[in-house]
Length: 217
Image (cartoon, rainbow, N blue to C red; front, side, top):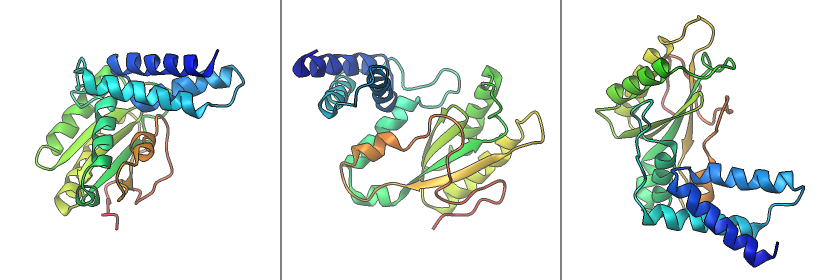
């Protein structure tokens, strides 16, 4: 397939995935899997066309919903868009925010979370974060939280962790928190769409936490 034709097809694919509410990171992984199956190196121009198509369509149309029906929390695609918008905004806004990832160690046992667990996770996060500037989304056995870097936010997150650990069916495992600072430079789209781990535990970039959550420096 000619380069221009492949790039055009990638733009159409990106637009289609955005219309269906799929996040840009998952869309990029899909195209990477195509190149891997074809035993060919990832083509930068084609990947750029994919992202351009996704971005254009995402800006043009209203998504079906920004809310995950299982949890009542924002969808991952909506959360990624918040990060992307922040990457283009004032530096001061990024300095005052952090992304906390709560890894549910007790849930990562080869089984998907049940609808009942997902609904309860959503209720916990919405209730405990209602009084602070924070947005949360569930991604596999991770919960990502965009939150302010202040004592009130960390206290609310600690309460979330304590209540989340109350959901586990067995004593093994706990909820573990790690923190990622937002970049200070503008337009870092690669950071905004590439920092969220899809499944399993990632290496903490801040402090691990059970009920002894500490504020990252």
